Amino acid sequence: MTHESAGTRGVSLGSIHLEKTTDGNGQERQSAPSEPILEVRNLTKKFGTKLVLDNVSLSIEKGKTTVVIGPSGCGKTVLIKHFIVLQRPTQGQVYFQGQRVDDLPERQLNQIRTHFGYLFQEGALFDSMTIAENIMFPIRHHAKIRDWRQVDEVVKMKLAMVGLDGFQNYFPARLSGGQRKRAALARAIALNPEVILYDEPTTGLDPIRSDIISELIVKLAKELGVTSVVVTHDMKSAYKVANRIIMLHNGKIVADGDADYIRNHPHPVVQQFINGQVSEDDLAVLRMSGAVAAAQFSPKDFEL
Amino acid sequence: MIAALGAKAVEDVVNAGRFGRFAWRSVTTSVRGCTRKSTFPLVWTQMFIIGVHSVPVIMITGAFVGMTLAVQAYDQLAGMGLEEHLGVLINISVVKELGPVLAAVMLAGRIGGALTAELGTMNVTEQIDAVRSMGTDPIRYLVAPRLLACLLLTPVLTIFADLMGVVGGALVSFLQFGINSRAYWTFSASAVAFWDVSVGITKAFFFGGAIAIISCFKGFSCKEGAHGVGQACTEAFVASFISILALDFALAVIFKTIYHIFWPIKSIVT
Image 1 (tube, rainbow over the protein chains, first blue to last red):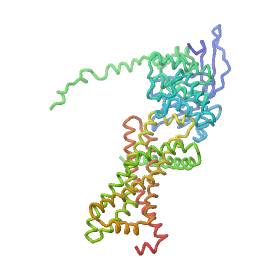
Image 2 (image 1 turned 180 degrees about the vertical axis):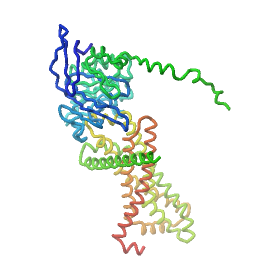
Image 3 (image 1 turned 90 degrees about the vertical axis):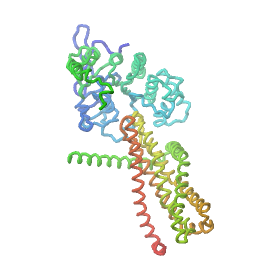
Image 4 (image 1 turned 30 degrees about the vertical axis):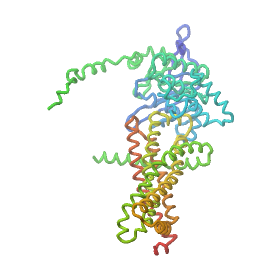
């Protein structure tokens, strides 16, 4: 099931994301932009002297699924951690529903963060708690509970949404990788968030489990009407879930548009990434360096 | 070389600043946490983990301290014909100095290591970020209960260590050296005052706070990987150990000054 609308092309102009749609005659028409729910302006992030994000500006539209792709270490995870201010920018601003959030103190941010669900790369389930207790965690901290049976019902419902009803009393260590991610997803949607951030949701899973997670992302976007931001380098999953795909390379956005736009993007880095091909130059270096004969040895070589 | 030295100095100052900020937030959050009902179950759980499981090792530590002191001090006092005063030396040393310090060192190894390893693992597996992402302050949820449990229980555990030190010292004195028990206890009771016991327990309160804050900080700032967690545990123990000794010295000076202010005549007489 593909989630993108055929023939659309997205162009990011500063803080506004305009959506251009091709009509039947092949003419581009410009539709009204959706309301941005998240926005970063001139975002720069450095760790020591290492520049991870370089003056990135983008806005995330409400109710849409935006996928951020890019090679490992290009700053994808750092970027989505800025959306929820788990990282503070070195320079630039982060806005949520028009309000600047990157300069807020932690106490105020805690309120803002209840509007988000975050699926961590490895799930980040609390291993000392059962799955039910993990899902109850945010509810317990942000809701006044009078009837615990209602909470149990909510837990059951959230687990049913990700196909894990009946696993309430399991500890995370007893679940498989895919089940852990689904349980973490159930926890991420516990507070009915408006935005769900997915950090590499299919990494480390076999193709079938990856497809289940992709289907869940589409299902949650559809049924809950949430805004989703997915960080991935799994192109199959990206094409399946995305309304819009952004490619990051060396801390900068190199491509931004819908699936067709990315597929046909002329930038060689984009083509190499989506086709999973190493560049000719890198390949030449790889083939030339380190002759096999020189790298082989026997224990006798070290004897005096 | 000068540049490297400068960079190291800057890094150390930055780390000291981070630690100061973390310690301040931990203390203020813990104080606020005392008024919240939701904190109590978390503190209770930590008290069970920190306190109940530490009782045997703390009691063994205390007993051996008292017994060793008796063996070491007997010959000197017996040479002067003062063996019946052995209890004074043992009990003062145990309740005021060795009991709190050695109990704290034992707790730094047992509890401090466990706290750092647990929080360090949570840090590298993004569980602390997960707490933050769900709108919960990790200092309030993870640090404050551990700090409160350590503050409350280190003095209690020190009392256990003191008690076993006193009993251990007395048993060696009576059974091995044949000292008259009545004289032993009479001299001890006249020399060991409530002040001495209070000094030891107050010290333990500060030691407990130092162990909890240092261990939690090291867990929160732990680097990635198994090596990172191991290194954080080692650093936590070394830093806790040094801070216990430094605090012991500072508190000894402070309590001595306070004592001289309030009981100047008695101190001159004794």
